[in-house]
Length: 260
Image (cartoon, rainbow, N blue to C red):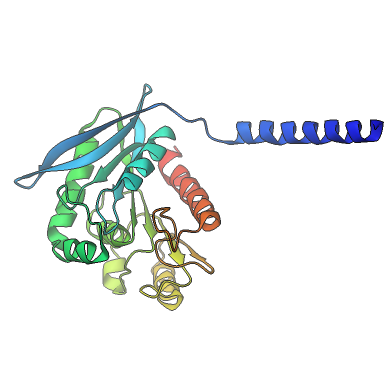
């Protein structure tokens, strides 16, 4: 009986120590304020979801670009997550309020987009962030998933304002003359079983970026498919790979947006 009690006490002490270490190693979360905002993109008023830390001071910022479904609650939750970690986060609504409920709708909405208008929207979001007193104007990043990942890469090529960019299984650019224009570090998150963006294409992209002397980090997650980070993807979501991907993303943005 004594040995059993001692063992239980020992296990409790070990678990308590583990939880204490985790509490100290996790970044302190900040209260967040949220709102839908409007700002000018050319002659249009467009909307975005804004999440800001409820704290004093200036913060780095992150522009979020949604999947082909539109500005869903998941993208908004990601913006809140970033804000709780000390970023001003803005998720741009490229679809002007429309949300797709079927792949057919999503494909139609995506195909209706103009690349020039999308880039104008993203640049306008950057300009909005730079107009805010609580934003560090030289510490702005961008991240996108799926369709948004491709637009994030395109933005890194066309818009020189970004200090870091994350591409989550987004369409890649192969033209080295275009890739040469990228000035910021890039993190790529990809899936081994992604039929649209196969590992060979990812490795070729990585090799070209390194050949050009660009700062590039790439992770291809084994055994998972496209959109594995979205929990609404009932057939393809992978919790373990998603946690790992978020860890990489958090470390990447902390390194390039929070370092002095």
